[in-house]
Length: 310
Image (cartoon, rainbow, N blue to C red):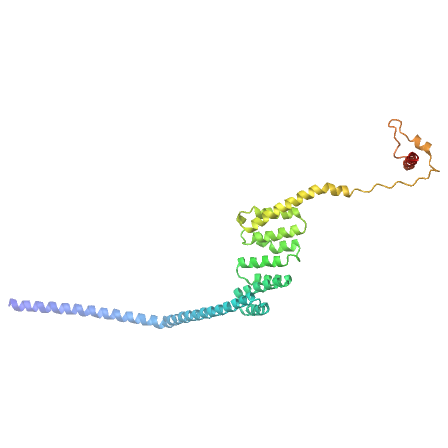
């Protein structure tokens, strides 16, 4: 009897555990189905967009790589053409070099096009065509994308057109480049100083050169040495001008008036004697007979000298 009761209790416990496991499995399966349905809905809603975005990223990356490869090949090709033109310049085949540089200017992007314009400007300077050189340098300055190279091109343009431009024109062209943060401001200042010196404005030229020589950024640079030499030269010129000024003034003294002709027949000596100042014993300079008196005295002196010779 106890054995039968024990078997029955074991069977009952197994049934309860089976039912418990069965219910848990059912809930688990339901949750899995709900989760799958949710994922399916999300996939149907956003899947095409996600897939399209992924494809777009892949296509964009491939396009970028292709563009970069094409740009690299173009850059290498322009580089080869540019250095080929430089070799022609070294070989003094200037016409061929200029034609190739012109083609590079027309075909290349901003970098090599600007470099080609700079080389064409140098060739024009070598040929003595300053106006054309200045034009090419100005075009290069407008083509360069960086301030450093653009300022260099503008300074070279000002140097090429130095004789043609007035000091006001140079000031207008270079004023922006003389700011403290510009790399070629000292060269721009030197151009202005040289123009002032050429015009004979030594005071302004000296001021510009002294500013360059005393600039901390110019220490140990050739531009500072040139400026100091110019200051010393201007100082010597100014000293020489100060020494020469009195001599020049003496040379420019007005001529003395000529002695009027005298008619002895009409000369009234008594009237002259009446004009004698009793206190000083001299003739009155305002006397109308004064010129005649001077003439008579000179005549008498000449006659006396002749009598002495006789």
